[in-house]
Length: 201
Image: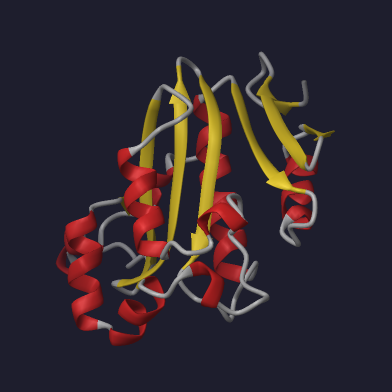
């Protein structure tokens, strides 16, 4: 069985070299806005980026799952993170996470759980030069590995023109899921088979 990502990506603060083991540099940790605000106080580049209106971000920058659409183009990423944590239009419970590498905040991830199903996933990078790059691919893979193991169904949506769709489609192929056109969006879905492997529905 795959390790639970929250065990695999332990907090650096819990790492004790005197007890042996290997320091894991990448983590997905519970999202706390106070922690992010503290990080912005230490990292001026991060503070400026997260407080830039979405419409003023580089053209190539895309959310991995929730794209920057006209209705939110005047909002900052910081406000979108706050909304993601506080407001849930899907019902169920929102599980927000930050991606941290070497104590530096590099991205946000969140998913919505209702019963034994994940209804929505949201992931984006704090590095606009990476767009749909390595950190985002890694975070999605780490997150899906845990979700597919723990829930019977995992689904999310993306706009058809999102360049990250190629990443999703590779993930869907890996977990034997399906993706279908729904208007301007594509719905991705993975269902857990009785043997524990992902299976399309």
